[in-house]
Length: 596
Image (tube, rainbow, N blue to C red; front, side, top):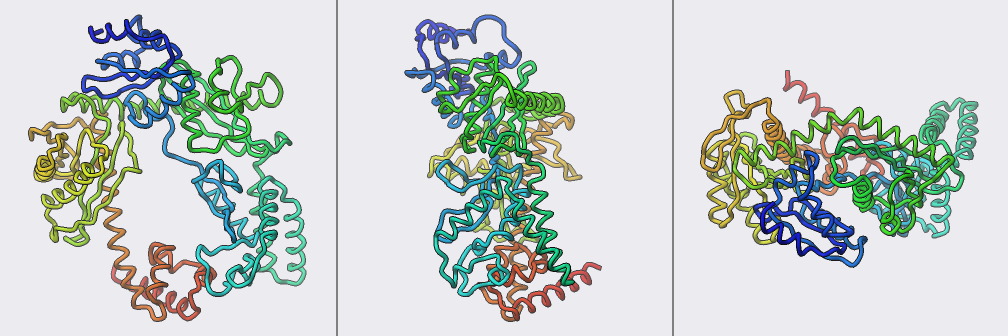
């Protein structure tokens, strides 16, 4: 323990607050909260600790703290500081994943859609659902049963959906508010499992059309019955109170914890999710932090059930008294199920988590030592792409604490270079990115990686020098087989990589990700140009229709395979649809001949 830390420990107050551990670069590497700052912070510097805490303590050169009035205020401040500073030993517990929900939009003529943007102010939202595929299947089913609006923008006349009784035609005919309110009520009842009336009605219609030998129509109702049964078959009613509950239990081993959440909606268990991560401190604190981060992105249920035997004093304050710790009955049985799920997940996935930890946190430590950098939290990586000198693009991917942060990815169309000149391509994109960083006060990386050799690295360093930015830049050199074999350091020294090392795995992953991102962007641009030029040659297909088709279907193959009903619903004329099918059919035959 250094003298500065010892002197600060002597003056620490015995009050609630947050503390921030700092490394020798004065960067926050860990944020914690405490009911008693003096007691908690001092505990780091006395006695024996586990390996993970020992690694943290080795890097601590100083600390700071903020006094709060209550432990709740300290906890909320801790959450905001973790989000703001992303300390390496406080890796965000939850990922950026949000679950899909089904929403009936709050507008004059509502539509049913899948959304991930949910909050407590939205009215008619149902879910969560385990994945988008399942949620989209349910939306398709609801759209076929309930005549809500289908078009994102109003056409001038009613479309096919109106004529097959799947839309009320608000574009042409008035629909009163009470009609929609009744439809919303029916959807709510349907999603709560009250489907018997619909199934009986469709069985009668199926039989009716079958007796009249109208087998295609009978098959439509048979498929509807099958879809309804598939949607509701797994939703066993456990409670009749129609409450939304999340049932949460956990199991720990060493400094790793596995948490399982059973999602119960309207008395039915929909699905469960489990998560493993490393933790410092006690189980209650890590559980509270995890749940607080989780429910920032998910709506709170009516109840959160937690297992007995733990100190939950702060939980009711944070979660508005929806925390329940059952002692007996069905709720204990559900907590047992969540415990078994958490235990199974830990047993089956701990090794994979440890491997991932080795390939991220440990690999970053290896890279820090190799490059003699104090800390590496954020990495920006760049790659260029083109086809025969055309459609020049560049891409940037961002890795934070060894994991990709796709919200920070950026794509660039090259503006000042007309040929495949990697040096000047790299100069342009590095200038554009870091001029923006300076202008808009964006976060700077600890390390920049350019996918290429010395020329690309020198281009990046030249631009950074012009901008007076002191950021380390490394290049990744490839061998004759186009496989990464060495790092080119700031001093232009080559360091061979051990392909069996965690560091190689991390750098290879970054390199492959930025290459994939650049290539996909380049192909997307090239593809749009090809698709647009082909659609331009089709009679009766104007600019508006072409843009609508590309926006909805992305490529020619999807347009070719689009059902005629969908194209009609987009207000495309019969003649234009026939021309599209004919032109794309001929185009595909030509493509096959060319590939021979």
